[in-house]
Image (tube, rainbow, N blue to C red):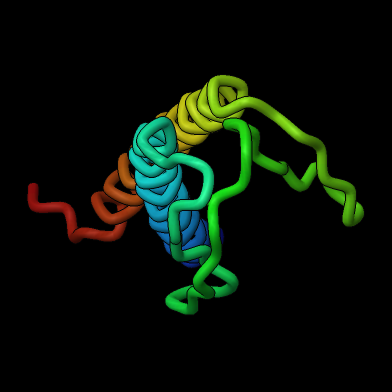
Length: 129
């Protein structure tokens, strides 16, 4: 009986962790989809257009669009590389697919843990004969 109680407590902690991870993944997916929408508007921007550039969450600076349709992507360690809008769009789309795969795996783990928790709860219920 003690082992089942310990397993139930462990499952409960795991369920909370999985739920937090799923929420984080959902936020990341939404942000990535918003980025795709923004990327789709870039072809309408021409050199010299005044644009708002985010420098932090909810904080923007006015800027003038430069030539070309390139974006600068942070690849880590403070290194940026120039990429086309098409390449960045493909990168973001691939990230969305990875996020969705992680969400599916997390959902499977969550459902498995919930099923096991149900089994444990049934074991705790008094048996009526």
